[in-house]
Length: 99
Image 1 (cartoon, helix red, strand yellow):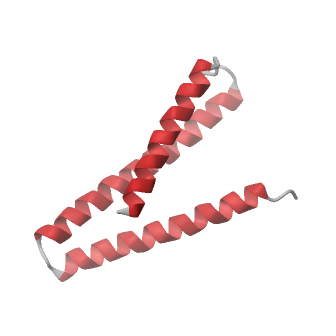
Image 2 (tube, one colour):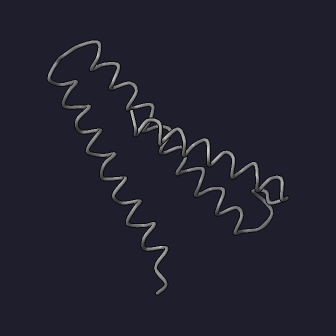
């Protein structure tokens, strides 16, 4: 549930950032930098959103049936999200370091 809430929070925050950029007159076609930023953040937001959909689907399957395969799928999805959390924390720290 925490992952679901954090993922939705990320998507909402990303949408808000796009609205703020738009208010400042920075659009997709403004320059190559803005195009790259919009593309990269859109792909990331879509990745998170699809992950949320998969997680909701698997949670529904797990609640509906108590089979081992549903538990295994849900467990593998949880491992994936934990790995992604660690990866993004690493990337955040890497970006914060002044090399």
